[in-house]
Image (cartoon, rainbow, N blue to C red; front, side, top):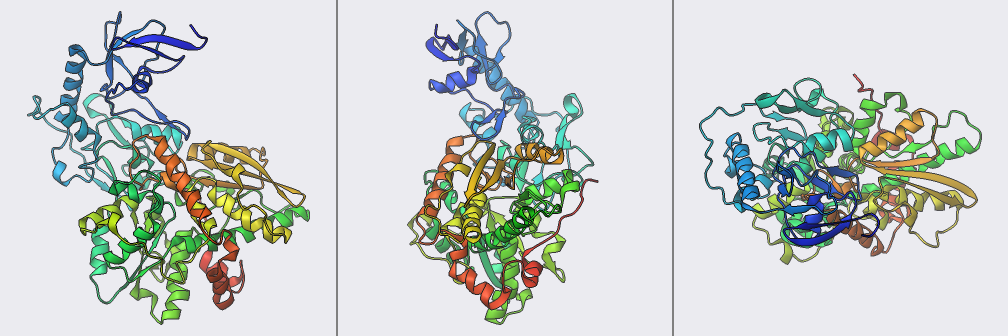
Length: 587
């Protein structure tokens, strides 16, 4: 036997795996499928859940009296496993029938119908009736928040959401309450997510196998606005959307559909189709200038210079530090997210250019993130009650609306975004991947700080899917130390170090979701397949590489915006329109 290798048989087939491998992983490695509901695994990012709570993956292990959960049982030398004998099949059917006995049969109107793992398993196991009907079912009120709809009548207690919220994201907004038949997954504080420290990152929605957790659907609102002749309805779309939405139309993960996306949005009836990438470039101008300002103050010996500066593009991350690190609210950049910068510029600069009052304009965003829905409603992003961005749709919502409108997405001709708010550089595209905001900032900060052109624009040392990454960048003799984290659990580790004085960085990028925005809670569901995240990431960098301009400060329309309207980065007007402040939400 090789060192650290385990030899066993699965369904009479010899298998050799690394020590510590679970039966589930061993079986899947050799093409034997075992059904699961509670298990999800994103190796290489930060998510690995195997609570063994649903018992759908039970197998028979020779010499063991009880059936074993394959997702939580490690392989041992000489183990003999049977994954589909009569005893196992009967147990799985019984478990599934018991789950269905306390589950609503409203699949026709359920938001997850057609993409529900419970529905798929029921079909696969050919269960057409439930022998346990007649008893009293759970009855819970449905909670509608600004971002997430929580229907615990559909919860199957798989505890995926609890795992991702508490162990991966370390938010602790939800957890199990009660015992036996009274068990439910509820907010940790109060009776609603709004009363909890929920960040609305949407990762609980992304991993929920059923319709217990879904996004707040705004497609009906959009249809009404598009039908209103008194409104000018404009749309912005985030960089992560264009490398993921194609999956909803049968394309391989990572297919770039930027041109088709713009065409589809026009066919839906938007008056103008713009790009969030425009204000991603604008974000770099403001955030990058802020970084250089703090850095120069630090180098000049200013003891009040607050470093490291933290990126502020991710609203779930902003919500997280407002709840958990209120003593550090002066460290993050004050720059708004690209979504909110877009809304502000659209309803001021652009509205003035076309001679229309802001109240007549409806700004809609297409985002990979459910926290963007929450961000639209924050009071500081409103003028006299009128929001800069009226509301947001997830990538999944937009795909559903395109299908509902009978638009043949794959046959659409490519088209460009409208100008001026549709022009962008490659630096804006990479905002969608973890490390992308930092790399975009470095491209501009290097040239502004040194006065020298970059020979190579790629800063590959900040790329990757490790949960926490570190890099040192040579700024013409000065060593700039940067950190990157994705997943709020990893962010917490970096922030705790800063709080205790162990900080080694000048700048840190943080994104709430695994892989960054490409793995956002509103993206097409990947069901634990990390290769999908990797494919989207590759596409993001491919989109960047294909752009003629790849540094934010080279965008001619951004230059024109400053010349005509803002003056310069961090000007008084820029501060008023493009920056924000943060609040203590620890209570």
